[in-house]
Every structure is written in C-alpha cells, then in structure tokens.
Image 1 (cartoon, rainbow, N blue to C red):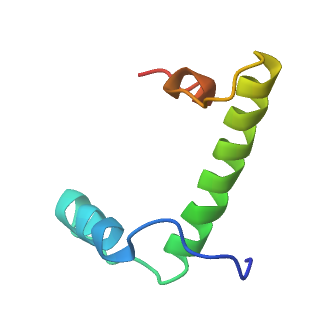
Image 2 (cartoon, rainbow, N blue to C red):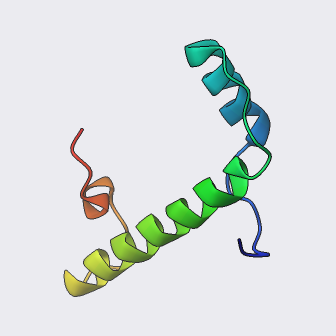
Length: 65
C-alpha cells in the first residue's frame, strides 16, 4: 500500500457495499481503490496526450459503459 492521499470517500464505499451485499468493508479498501483510480487516471492522461489533447475525457478511460 502507498502513503498517498485517499481519493475515495470511504463512508460512501462502505455504505454501498453494505447496501448491496450486507457485507462489511475492510479499512484497506479505500487505499486500494485509490491506487486503482490513480492507475486508471494515469492511463487516461496518456491516452489524451497521445491524442494531442489537454483535456482528459470519459472516453480516455476505455471502460465500456
């Protein structure tokens, strides 16, 4: 795990998981999700740069809707 700032609202993640499944959520989930989000953002930035754009767009994330 990294010491970087958490990018997600932990209470919202816990509430979502609890409502969806009735399960509890480990405290380490927010940090791991933040790592995944950073990686996705880094990839989206690279995609925008390769398109010679200065704006990251939803399509740069490459996730099917």
